[in-house]
Image 1 (spheres, rainbow, N blue to C red):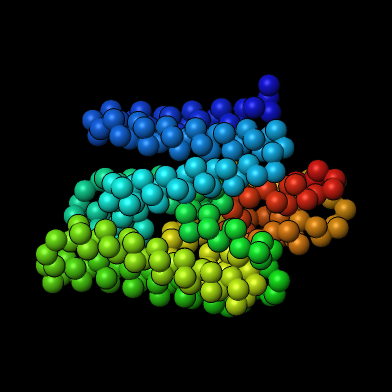
Image 2: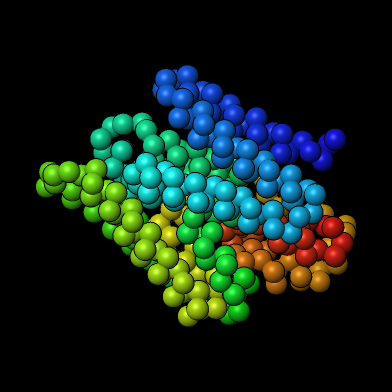
Length: 272
Protein backbone atom coordinates (compact mmCIF):
# COMPACT_ATOMS: atom_id res chain seq x y z
CA UNK A 1 0.00 0.00 0.00
CA UNK A 2 3.00 2.32 0.36
CA UNK A 3 3.02 3.10 -3.34
CA UNK A 4 -0.44 4.64 -3.01
CA UNK A 5 0.70 7.07 -0.32
CA UNK A 6 1.36 10.00 -2.69
CA UNK A 7 -2.10 10.18 -4.30
CA UNK A 8 -3.62 9.98 -0.81
CA UNK A 9 -1.30 12.70 0.52
CA UNK A 10 -2.09 14.96 -2.45
CA UNK A 11 -5.83 14.44 -2.01
CA UNK A 12 -5.64 15.21 1.73
CA UNK A 13 -3.55 18.33 1.05
CA UNK A 14 -6.04 19.77 -1.43
CA UNK A 15 -9.00 18.73 0.70
CA UNK A 16 -7.49 20.60 3.64
CA UNK A 17 -7.24 23.73 1.48
CA UNK A 18 -10.80 23.19 0.21
CA UNK A 19 -12.34 22.85 3.68
CA UNK A 20 -10.27 25.72 5.13
CA UNK A 21 -11.34 28.15 2.39
CA UNK A 22 -14.96 26.95 2.52
CA UNK A 23 -15.18 27.64 6.25
CA UNK A 24 -13.11 30.86 6.19
CA UNK A 25 -14.82 32.40 3.18
CA UNK A 26 -18.25 30.87 3.93
CA UNK A 27 -18.51 29.88 0.28
CA UNK A 28 -19.11 26.26 -0.69
CA UNK A 29 -17.66 26.94 -4.14
CA UNK A 30 -14.14 26.63 -2.70
CA UNK A 31 -14.98 23.20 -1.32
CA UNK A 32 -16.04 22.05 -4.79
CA UNK A 33 -13.21 23.83 -6.61
CA UNK A 34 -10.23 22.53 -4.65
CA UNK A 35 -11.79 19.12 -4.04
CA UNK A 36 -12.22 18.70 -7.80
CA UNK A 37 -8.63 19.74 -8.51
CA UNK A 38 -7.34 17.51 -5.69
CA UNK A 39 -9.25 14.48 -6.98
CA UNK A 40 -8.03 15.14 -10.54
CA UNK A 41 -4.36 15.39 -9.52
CA UNK A 42 -4.59 12.39 -7.19
CA UNK A 43 -6.17 10.37 -10.00
CA UNK A 44 -3.29 11.32 -12.29
CA UNK A 45 -0.69 10.21 -9.74
CA UNK A 46 -2.57 6.94 -9.25
CA UNK A 47 -2.68 6.33 -13.00
CA UNK A 48 1.04 7.04 -13.19
CA UNK A 49 1.69 4.48 -10.45
CA UNK A 50 -0.40 2.01 -12.43
CA UNK A 51 1.84 2.82 -15.44
CA UNK A 52 -0.88 4.34 -17.60
CA UNK A 53 1.12 6.25 -20.24
CA UNK A 54 -1.36 9.12 -20.61
CA UNK A 55 -1.73 9.78 -16.87
CA UNK A 56 -0.46 13.35 -17.00
CA UNK A 57 -2.60 14.18 -20.03
CA UNK A 58 -5.70 13.05 -18.15
CA UNK A 59 -4.93 15.53 -15.36
CA UNK A 60 -4.09 18.30 -17.84
CA UNK A 61 -7.47 17.93 -19.53
CA UNK A 62 -9.46 17.55 -16.31
CA UNK A 63 -7.92 20.60 -14.63
CA UNK A 64 -7.03 22.71 -17.67
CA UNK A 65 -10.46 22.55 -19.29
CA UNK A 66 -12.12 23.15 -15.93
CA UNK A 67 -10.07 26.32 -15.40
CA UNK A 68 -10.44 27.57 -18.97
CA UNK A 69 -14.04 26.67 -19.79
CA UNK A 70 -15.88 26.56 -16.46
CA UNK A 71 -14.06 29.18 -14.39
CA UNK A 72 -12.99 31.42 -17.28
CA UNK A 73 -15.72 31.32 -19.92
CA UNK A 74 -18.79 30.22 -17.94
CA UNK A 75 -18.19 31.91 -14.58
CA UNK A 76 -16.38 34.87 -16.12
CA UNK A 77 -13.33 34.72 -13.83
CA UNK A 78 -10.09 36.02 -15.33
CA UNK A 79 -7.64 33.37 -14.14
CA UNK A 80 -4.74 34.84 -16.10
CA UNK A 81 -2.17 37.14 -14.52
CA UNK A 82 -4.41 40.16 -15.25
CA UNK A 83 -7.09 38.66 -13.01
CA UNK A 84 -4.59 38.36 -10.19
CA UNK A 85 -3.61 42.04 -10.51
CA UNK A 86 -7.27 43.04 -10.73
CA UNK A 87 -8.32 41.37 -7.47
CA UNK A 88 -5.09 42.47 -5.79
CA UNK A 89 -5.78 46.12 -6.65
CA UNK A 90 -9.37 45.86 -5.43
CA UNK A 91 -8.15 44.35 -2.16
CA UNK A 92 -10.36 41.28 -2.51
CA UNK A 93 -8.97 37.87 -1.54
CA UNK A 94 -11.03 35.92 -4.05
CA UNK A 95 -10.83 33.91 -7.29
CA UNK A 96 -7.53 34.54 -9.08
CA UNK A 97 -5.71 35.75 -5.94
CA UNK A 98 -6.50 32.50 -4.09
CA UNK A 99 -5.62 30.51 -7.20
CA UNK A 100 -2.26 32.25 -7.52
CA UNK A 101 -1.50 31.92 -3.82
CA UNK A 102 -2.12 28.16 -3.86
CA UNK A 103 -0.78 27.22 -7.31
CA UNK A 104 1.84 29.81 -8.15
CA UNK A 105 3.15 31.63 -5.10
CA UNK A 106 3.25 29.22 -2.14
CA UNK A 107 2.37 25.92 -3.82
CA UNK A 108 5.66 25.77 -5.77
CA UNK A 109 7.51 25.58 -2.46
CA UNK A 110 5.98 22.10 -2.21
CA UNK A 111 5.45 20.86 -5.77
CA UNK A 112 7.66 23.20 -7.82
CA UNK A 113 6.32 23.89 -11.29
CA UNK A 114 3.88 21.00 -11.15
CA UNK A 115 1.25 23.53 -12.23
CA UNK A 116 2.95 23.82 -15.61
CA UNK A 117 2.99 20.07 -16.09
CA UNK A 118 -0.46 19.12 -14.87
CA UNK A 119 -2.87 22.06 -14.82
CA UNK A 120 -1.92 24.89 -17.19
CA UNK A 121 -4.54 25.21 -19.94
CA UNK A 122 -2.04 26.85 -22.31
CA UNK A 123 0.49 24.02 -21.98
CA UNK A 124 -2.41 21.56 -22.18
CA UNK A 125 -2.90 22.53 -25.82
CA UNK A 126 0.78 23.01 -26.65
CA UNK A 127 1.66 19.51 -25.46
CA UNK A 128 -0.43 18.09 -28.32
CA UNK A 129 1.97 19.62 -30.86
CA UNK A 130 4.60 17.37 -32.49
CA UNK A 131 7.78 18.74 -30.83
CA UNK A 132 7.59 17.01 -27.45
CA UNK A 133 11.34 17.20 -26.93
CA UNK A 134 13.38 20.25 -28.02
CA UNK A 135 15.12 19.77 -31.35
CA UNK A 136 17.52 22.65 -30.96
CA UNK A 137 19.64 24.44 -28.34
CA UNK A 138 18.00 26.55 -25.66
CA UNK A 139 17.71 30.22 -26.66
CA UNK A 140 18.51 33.27 -24.54
CA UNK A 141 15.01 34.68 -24.79
CA UNK A 142 13.91 34.43 -21.16
CA UNK A 143 13.82 38.24 -20.87
CA UNK A 144 10.55 38.23 -22.85
CA UNK A 145 8.65 36.83 -19.85
CA UNK A 146 9.53 39.93 -17.82
CA UNK A 147 8.26 42.23 -20.57
CA UNK A 148 4.95 40.36 -20.71
CA UNK A 149 4.78 40.36 -16.90
CA UNK A 150 5.29 44.14 -16.77
CA UNK A 151 2.80 44.74 -19.61
CA UNK A 152 0.14 42.78 -17.71
CA UNK A 153 0.69 44.88 -14.58
CA UNK A 154 0.70 48.17 -16.51
CA UNK A 155 -2.50 47.20 -18.37
CA UNK A 156 -4.51 46.54 -15.20
CA UNK A 157 -2.90 49.46 -13.38
CA UNK A 158 -3.95 51.78 -16.23
CA UNK A 159 -7.56 50.62 -15.95
CA UNK A 160 -7.64 51.67 -12.30
CA UNK A 161 -5.60 54.84 -12.83
CA UNK A 162 -7.92 56.12 -15.56
CA UNK A 163 -10.99 54.78 -13.73
CA UNK A 164 -12.23 52.74 -16.66
CA UNK A 165 -15.91 51.88 -16.54
CA UNK A 166 -17.19 48.32 -16.33
CA UNK A 167 -13.77 46.89 -15.48
CA UNK A 168 -15.20 43.43 -14.81
CA UNK A 169 -16.40 43.21 -18.43
CA UNK A 170 -13.01 44.40 -19.65
CA UNK A 171 -11.32 41.72 -17.55
CA UNK A 172 -13.55 39.04 -19.08
CA UNK A 173 -12.59 40.08 -22.60
CA UNK A 174 -8.96 40.41 -21.51
CA UNK A 175 -9.12 36.76 -20.49
CA UNK A 176 -10.45 35.69 -23.88
CA UNK A 177 -8.10 37.86 -25.94
CA UNK A 178 -5.16 37.01 -23.71
CA UNK A 179 -5.75 33.29 -24.20
CA UNK A 180 -6.02 33.69 -27.95
CA UNK A 181 -2.71 35.58 -28.00
CA UNK A 182 -1.04 33.03 -25.72
CA UNK A 183 -2.16 30.10 -27.87
CA UNK A 184 -1.12 31.89 -31.07
CA UNK A 185 2.30 32.79 -29.67
CA UNK A 186 2.77 29.32 -28.17
CA UNK A 187 1.94 27.50 -31.41
CA UNK A 188 4.04 29.87 -33.53
CA UNK A 189 7.06 29.49 -31.23
CA UNK A 190 6.66 25.72 -31.06
CA UNK A 191 6.90 25.41 -34.85
CA UNK A 192 9.56 28.11 -35.21
CA UNK A 193 11.86 26.64 -32.55
CA UNK A 194 10.67 23.01 -32.86
CA UNK A 195 9.85 22.95 -29.16
CA UNK A 196 6.35 22.53 -27.68
CA UNK A 197 7.40 24.24 -24.47
CA UNK A 198 9.13 27.27 -26.02
CA UNK A 199 6.31 29.52 -24.78
CA UNK A 200 6.77 28.25 -21.22
CA UNK A 201 10.53 28.81 -21.36
CA UNK A 202 10.61 32.28 -22.88
CA UNK A 203 7.24 34.07 -22.81
CA UNK A 204 4.93 32.90 -20.00
CA UNK A 205 4.78 35.72 -17.39
CA UNK A 206 3.59 33.40 -14.62
CA UNK A 207 7.05 31.84 -14.47
CA UNK A 208 8.27 35.07 -12.86
CA UNK A 209 6.41 33.81 -9.76
CA UNK A 210 7.03 30.10 -10.29
CA UNK A 211 10.78 29.96 -10.87
CA UNK A 212 12.07 31.49 -7.58
CA UNK A 213 9.78 29.37 -5.38
CA UNK A 214 10.55 26.23 -7.41
CA UNK A 215 14.19 26.50 -6.40
CA UNK A 216 13.16 25.45 -2.87
CA UNK A 217 10.60 22.83 -3.98
CA UNK A 218 10.03 19.92 -1.60
CA UNK A 219 9.09 17.47 -4.38
CA UNK A 220 11.96 17.07 -6.84
CA UNK A 221 13.22 14.49 -9.30
CA UNK A 222 16.34 12.96 -7.75
CA UNK A 223 18.93 10.61 -9.16
CA UNK A 224 20.28 7.51 -7.44
CA UNK A 225 23.91 7.80 -8.49
CA UNK A 226 24.61 4.17 -7.64
CA UNK A 227 22.17 3.08 -10.38
CA UNK A 228 22.81 5.78 -12.98
CA UNK A 229 24.88 4.65 -16.00
CA UNK A 230 25.06 8.12 -17.60
CA UNK A 231 23.22 7.00 -20.74
CA UNK A 232 21.72 10.46 -21.25
CA UNK A 233 18.19 9.23 -22.01
CA UNK A 234 16.66 11.42 -19.28
CA UNK A 235 18.22 14.55 -20.79
CA UNK A 236 17.02 13.66 -24.28
CA UNK A 237 13.36 13.24 -23.29
CA UNK A 238 13.12 16.25 -20.94
CA UNK A 239 10.89 18.94 -22.50
CA UNK A 240 12.43 21.61 -20.24
CA UNK A 241 16.16 20.80 -20.67
CA UNK A 242 16.70 19.92 -16.99
CA UNK A 243 19.78 17.99 -15.89
CA UNK A 244 17.99 15.61 -13.52
CA UNK A 245 21.15 13.59 -12.87
CA UNK A 246 22.42 16.50 -10.77
CA UNK A 247 20.74 16.45 -7.36
CA UNK A 248 21.86 19.94 -6.36
CA UNK A 249 19.41 22.82 -6.40
CA UNK A 250 21.75 24.65 -8.76
CA UNK A 251 21.40 22.01 -11.46
CA UNK A 252 21.02 23.14 -15.05
CA UNK A 253 17.52 24.61 -15.60
CA UNK A 254 16.53 23.23 -12.20
CA UNK A 255 13.66 25.69 -11.71
CA UNK A 256 12.17 24.62 -15.06
CA UNK A 257 11.22 21.05 -14.02
CA UNK A 258 7.47 20.50 -14.51
CA UNK A 259 7.47 17.02 -12.88
CA UNK A 260 6.23 15.46 -16.12
CA UNK A 261 8.06 12.23 -15.20
CA UNK A 262 9.23 11.61 -18.77
CA UNK A 263 12.77 11.16 -17.45
CA UNK A 264 11.58 8.65 -14.85
CA UNK A 265 9.80 6.61 -17.52
CA UNK A 266 12.80 6.73 -19.87
CA UNK A 267 15.45 5.70 -17.32
CA UNK A 268 16.49 2.08 -18.09
CA UNK A 269 17.90 1.55 -14.59
CA UNK A 270 15.12 3.09 -12.47
CA UNK A 271 17.68 5.55 -11.12
CA UNK A 272 15.24 8.49 -11.02
